[in-house]
Length: 244
Length: 244
DNA sequence: GAGTGGTCTAGACCACCAA
DNA sequence: TGGTGGTCTAGACCACTCA
Image 1 (spheres, rainbow over the protein chains, first blue to last red):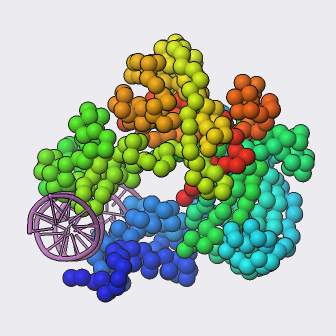
Image 2: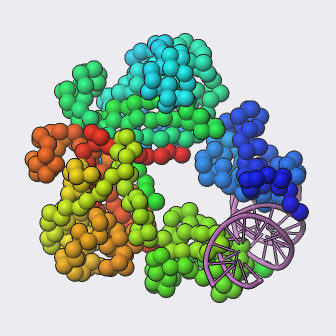
Image 3: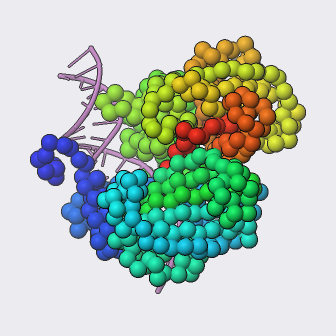
């Protein structure tokens, strides 16, 4: 039986199921950390075979949006459960030691999007944004100076949130306080010399080589929701990238 | 029917098929760029269903070891076919312009593995190695100073090869001249200040911030076969990393 | 033991490609 | 038109988890 609607562009059934599941995730029908219905339940809901649902879930699971656990169920991915490592943090100690990560909040102000931020976050130029600056400390040593910009609208009330309480993970906080889940990010790396402000924040001389990490994070539907520039001291740390 | 041999550790059939296919790749039964037999042919060869072969190929395809082309067949991945971009090169121009990449060969000498290289390449300390240094030029501007070390044994005769002829791609050359295919790599990134030799090669002042990219490349069976340190000028370029 | 995801099969049909 | 990979189904059985 062909369940395909007549349409000029062919789309596999399992991709359509994937979209339906994603929509339920956006709508908040299943919350982060919770389990979604079993494959057979979803199959009967969408009137397809279990194998087709399976393929849709496989794909979402490969994108780290869902997590499968044999014998238990399929769960909505969350930044909360990552006990040991922050999901998007690729910076690790050269000697592999475990480290205590701390967050020193510097400022949080309302601003307006300039041309670049507007384009990057797909908002209007001049739209309200919130800018956060903070210092990340690894085992007592300040290593990353972060500059974060998010659109103000979906993050109303961010000013009042105590970022410290979230153990340095903005994503955990976004998820819990605003229901916004980041599922993907792009990072662009360069080597730069420390500017005056960063140098003093990290206790370095101006011009000292730093790893500049520009990150754009995306929520469901590939919508950009956060811009971030991290300047990292990499004398005893490195950024790990796996190529396939 | 259960085709599983009685054994303490359970391994899915499709993983065993994957190993068999990989062994044929190592043995050179199918060469890079060539097509492998159809799913049904492999299924009958290994006495499993087409779906099981399919799952094994899916997995190899996800690892970029095989390439599927609907209507044509499944092909052995190669570094030769990547016309536009080098498979492991993540460095691109900030403005997105296409660039002409050139390779300036500096030196190629026989050396012996020190403790670190021995450990990294899983060879004995003091074992013969070959060290290559070269300069990579983007649109006429020297941007990367590469230091490459490979074990001498599998690369016998590398000294005589004219690296220039391979358009800057060592991997293309390894594949064609030595039958060694890199399928995966790990990169560790830092920001460093240019040392004297690198500064003069790239036309910079000493201490100028450079992106240090340390790469270990692996061939089949996760065997490390090349160590590489690239020092990159990233004023007009960035390294792209996608996080999921 | 009941329920979940994971594997494996067999067969039907579809989309794409080349001759 | 025939061959290839791609999708979809239905059903059987296995491995894991938890009560």
